[in-house]
Amino acid sequence: MAEPEVKKEGWEKDLLENLALSSLREQRRARRWGIFFKLLTFAYLFLLLFVAMGWIEDGKVRISEKHTAIIDLQGMIVPNGMNSADKVNSSLRSAFEDKNTKGVVLRINSPGGTPVQAGYINDEIRRLRTKYPEIPVYAVVGDICASGGYYVAAAADKIYVDKASLIGSIGVLMDGFGFTGTLDKLGIERRLLTSGENKGFLDPFSPLDPTQKAHAATLLREIHEQFIQVVKNGRGDRLKDAPELYSGIVWTGQRSIDLGLADALGSAEYVAREVIEAETLVDFSPREGFADVFSKRFGQIAMNFLLENGFWSLK
Image (cartoon, rainbow, N blue to C red; front, side, top):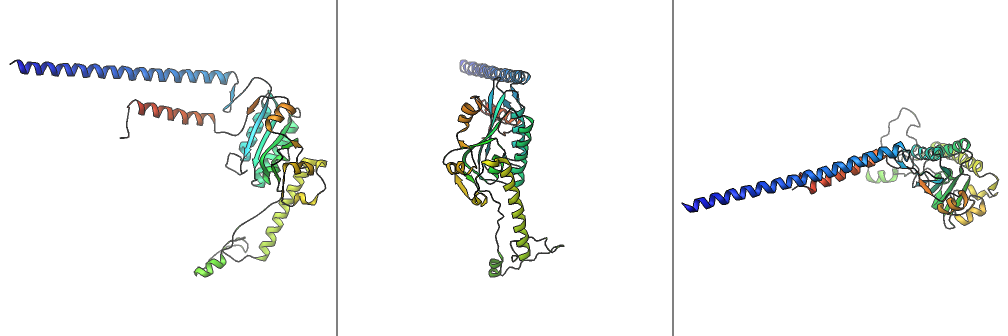
């Protein structure tokens, strides 16, 4: 009868050990959760403190000393992108309105964009320069500042470049394709029905209509003339009397200074330190909102925490 008693005692011992281990695991898990929520609470309280003291506004950290505001304009200037007029203009307003901004640097590395978006940004820079005459705004060019990029830069007080930057392309284009020959070879007939004789304007599957082509040339010429006037208004008598300025070609940064398209060589750091004399840089570039960034990062942290601690598994 002794053998069954041993088995019973062994079973009870295993049960007690399992219960003890389970309790220990639950305590560790509860401790981790407690630490996690304490850290989250501290982060929230610090965030409220920063907001209350004006150190954070619109998702950007503010510095309580005179600084140079930097706004990056990188890539194509198009609607619904990071370089849209809405986003860039919002950054410009925040930079100018900051009480510690001594000067604004618009750091441009853009091959162009739509004339409307570039025009909106140009107009806003000129408006802000008038409203805040004590705050200068300088354009600093990286690799390229062409077409719509230069349209924006022309509104600045001065334009700084690198000797190897590409500057200019003061022109307008409208491109497309013609597939009529290809469709004929494939035996495909294009059926275009319109309620207006020009509703199918420059349709790529129809032969090029001479009247429509002439009208497109008129549109391009008018927009080109607007572009030229914007450049003349912005650069004034610094521009050299050279017809090739408005031919749509680009020049190196060094040559652009000779032509009056730019003013001097210099980087953003150089302009902040030597021209504005406020070496501290504060980035006002368009970014995702603070709430969006915080929620994404918090969500990822929470997910990792839950997976690491076995709350659920993808196995």
